[in-house]
Length: 522
Ligand code: GLA
Image (cartoon, rainbow, N blue to C red):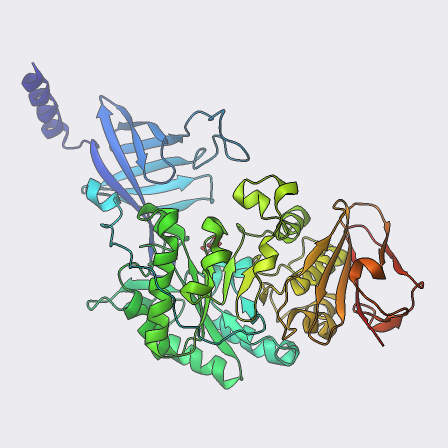
């Protein structure tokens, strides 16, 4: 019986010349010489086409038709999982429509919805093409040599928050120029960091190349260096980066050598597709591999981990030679995102599952010179927060000794943005050589007091109002451990001395705003 059905199907295929049953890859050009690949396993039954989208979070099915050489289907997201907490639910890639015209064994496709209209080719493929490469066993653990870099947190700029996939050679050169002309360089910002989407394919020898947006990375590095600045790059321990570009999997030493030869000074190394090969328990060993590769490459390269704060990275980050490690998912240019990430640094609880009031130490406590938590890059100046909110953002990141990586277009900054990003007195708190952790004083709520002891025995104090109406916040000298009867006070946003009562400092703080002072015994 089966044989007869197969025969009829084959005869039909021969007769009509076309069947879409099989494994396919949709290649959508990204405009820089690369393609974004999506795999489909399709089944044709008469004119009906069903099947699955392969990869991603899984569970997306296909509903469509193939008729008169025209393929048409939609993606059907999996039913919502009632046990799944937080945002998510159906979403995924649902809502997109795929239309294709048969062209000599392939389809010229148009995808409508989602990221907007896109075109590409749907070509026959094999199921193996959708699988991750074989697992390379991670190395035995050992301590990677300290590179001695970024003793105070690194300062610079990163392309992702604003430019994302649009970053190119021209943007980086213009940024380097603007870092100098705007005064950012003078204020301490040094690194010009290219995030994801610079990568091209590997050449015949397995060397990573750049894509068409970056015609000559060595020349670009030379240009950035000629301005007295340094240059950073991005990769992943997985086969693909988060944006789907070539990662460093299996090429760690080779890539570190290439970057060193180009003159790269900073690497952000982003977990992404490594999760298709490794478990979270492997993270330390996997990050150690690149830590070793950077040391072996022989060029001073700041090592910045990005694995979203999983597996208590703050405990083993220094062991893999990292100068900083992300402690959270991606920041957005929005008050709720920044507020949650910034104040979340004082809780180890949300990250370990431990109830908040039992968390005796916080992520922030792991700060040391050359070893910093990274609550993600700055959004100051990107336009979706108020000035007071950006001041809160910057003050918190300074108190937390976070790397200060501007994420805006530094060539078109307003005076307000400049005044925030180049606040020398706030930056001095961030760059304090003692590298001590910040503490959040109890009680917690919409009014928060965050302090950071500094090398000269003074204390930086941020009085934060997380509420959407003005608040009076006060802090006593006793709670700060300041012994002086009348400490010397300076307002780090007004850039002026301030006076206070004998035992305390009172401030009226605007909604979502901050008052930041530095208190020192006379
Ligand atoms: C991840 C990182 C981001 C950015 C993108 C690039 O989401 O967390 O900071 O690097 O990847 O694809």
